[in-house]
Image 1 (spheres, one colour):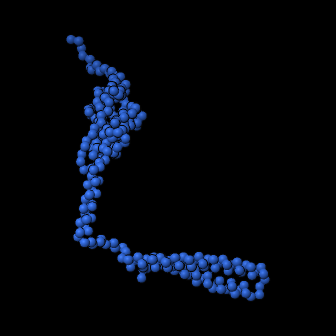
Image 2 (cartoon, rainbow over the protein chains, first blue to last red; image 1 turned 45 degrees about the horizontal axis):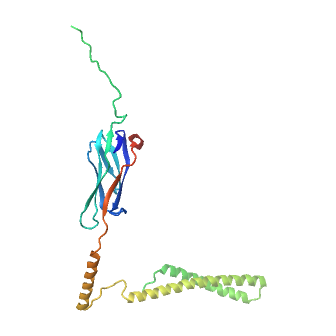
Image 3 (spheres, each protein chain N blue to C red; image 1 turned 90 degrees about the vertical axis):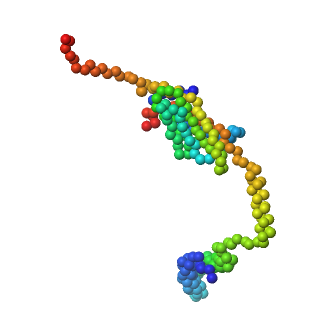
Length: 110
Length: 131
């Protein structure tokens, strides 16, 4: 579980692609990034799909995922990577800090 | 006849040879007349210098001549065309069979595919610091 608050983001989320032996591997095309709940986290990937900016939106728990085509040939073999849970809490700057009262116009007690 | 690949350079070099020729002949003539030993030494030095320049220029001209000659041979060989070769049907069939065997052998091998995508979130940073 990764903790973060709504005043923060993950500016440099990186992707590592390996084969079954653990050695670096390539995929066909650009990896596609997504979040499990866009009301909690949003993701903007770089052009090559190897890193991304993950921004918080609101409190909650969400994950970041990436899908790619492992088949370098004509076929398609989709693999998916999922991040750990991201627990977003409300940050101090987002919390209520001022209470303003409006009394309205006075009226006579009848 | 193949064209000279650099006619401008050739013209410049031939013009330079045309200037050097009379100078060299004049210097050699001057060295033969009755002059002081010091002047004769200076004349001979200049003559040697210009002959050296003449020889270098001539070497470039000769190289240009060689290029023209080699280019002519290349064009006579059919350059730039490089036509395919017609062979008898039986040999062509043998080639196709061999190519098919090679494709079959290559198809045995497959590239090791990616199997894991690992996401590293990295440390969080304040949104205000990214601005």
